[in-house]
Amino acid sequence: MGILAIMVLNKAGGLIYQRDFNEGLKKLSSNDYLVLAGTFHGVHAITSRVSPVPGSGGLEIMESEHFRMQCFQTLTGTKFLIFAQPHQPNIDVIVKRVYELYADYVMKNPFYQIEMPIRCEAFDRNLLAYIQPRQ
Amino acid sequence: MSANKAARIGEEVWKTRIDKVNAELVTLTYGSIVAQLCKDMEGDYLEVNKQLEKMGYNIGLRLIEDFLAKTNMGKCANFRETAETISKIGFKVFLNITPTVTNWTTDGKQFSLIFEENPLADFVELPDDGRAQNELWYSNLLCGVLRGSLEMVQMQVDAHFVNDVLRGNEVTEMRVTLVRIIDDELPPGED
Amino acid sequence: MQRQDPLQSPFVPFSPNPSLQQGTPTATAPLKHSLTASQSSNLRYSSSRKSIYDRHLNRTQRSELSKSSFAFLFGEMVQYAQKRVSGIQDLEKKSATPSFVPTHVSPAGPRHLKSLSEAIHSLTPRRLNLHGYTIGQRLLELLLWRDGRSAKRETRILGILQFITTTLYRSIFNKPADALEKSRDNEDEYMLIDNDPMVSSYISIPKEMSQLNCAAFVAGIIEAVLDGCLFPSRVTAHSVPTEQFPGKTVFLIKFDESVLEREAVL
Image 1 (cartoon, rainbow over the protein chains, first blue to last red):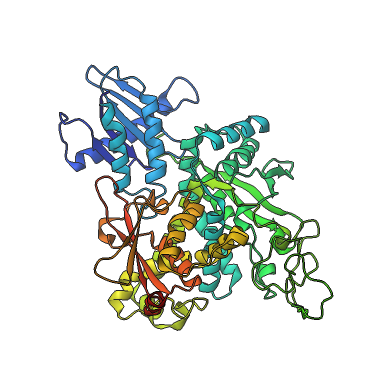
Image 2 (cartoon, chains in turn cyan, brown, yellow):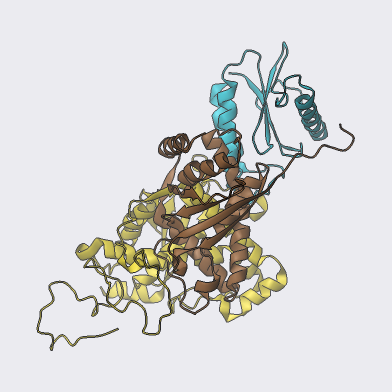
């Protein structure tokens, strides 16, 4: 399995969580990540409107030779971005599990403020425990 | 989606995907919260109602993600489907009850939830001070939960109790009204 | 409540007469006609439904609800407790006024707060402890009633601690506590260990609040049970995270002088 990175965006497109799971990735500054997230949020909104198919959602998958990016938007507007090796199977399953972990360790944490950056130790721990054995 | 299908989904999720705890612990915990509020508000039951609704609202904002993550539900086609989803799946998955949906208005924007059982109010008797039975809605937290969770999926609703067996009424009944659908606002400058 | 003089009653009761019994109801016929409320009760009851006194107490014994429901409720409880203690003026008021000390607590209950800084650091766990306390009082009654005739009245420290570690813990959390230890340094201190307290399953304490442990709630439950069984004590929750168990919690149980004196005599 080759999950490279995971990002979580809040409803307004703000980056609330970013984590690399592969040592070889180039590190960006935190500002860069914020810009990246905001850009994606805008692109996502635009693609849902320019789509020739009526009633279509926004950008879901982006593939290149080097990576595959999948975006899952919940009904509440939260976006989960998974960056993986190309031809990585079962990303849907992985995204679902990440969503469940988010619902458990972020939503049920009374010290987490909604829409704010995620600083929940239990979420980090459980996410790592889920992703790492499968790398 | 029909009521039957919703009931089947609710039952299946409850059986296979939900971690469970002792119901009495939850009942006692809720009771402790209400009792503490009554003490803090110094017997102003109308204020307690407000606080319970607000707490429920805060819970609702978060609970919706847990609900969506566990049930994989997509968008509901109309408000009737929403009602069935709430009663057969939502309440089933969290409280293991399925309140009945009735008393629809002709425009389909308002319905009632009738609670045969209410685990939050098990073994509860309101204080006998002449006011509690007239002013306090014990389970008001549930109204806030509905309001908060539906707001996160673009529905603005109003939910309030109209009957409660704790008050001596025949049934426990919550009235839910769809106020409006919250449309996404386009960022300025975008057509 | 009517009391019949047992000597004058022509019948020897087959099972305890509800109107003579004080406290918890027995497993006899529903108390439909007994005076469950005072003569001047103004409570209205639904005509179609039975009152709570008609429902059997064991009805919900095995009932289950979703862990999420508890987690969300508990989370709100923690947030509410925090909100009530934020603000220095609020703190000063809360630590000084007697209304903060619960009136239903036994005489050996929570100690008064000595300083303002102590107040600041201990108020949230205090309120959580209080919530747990009211629950513990009720749970104790329920557990002892359910044990029925085989309920044993614990008189020794080890006995009551075993009760808490096994029976109480199992009834709430479906598993016994992980370990029970006696302090080497202090005669009056015992430690109950839970590797992964259920109440804190989803909670991550921010670094700036590391002294807060939400299991103070469970500490309150334990304290109520001890107080109710006449082992006055003070119970606090402390985080002792390990690599394997990041949520590991020690409940420090500090018994009153009177308990040790009694233990020595027995």
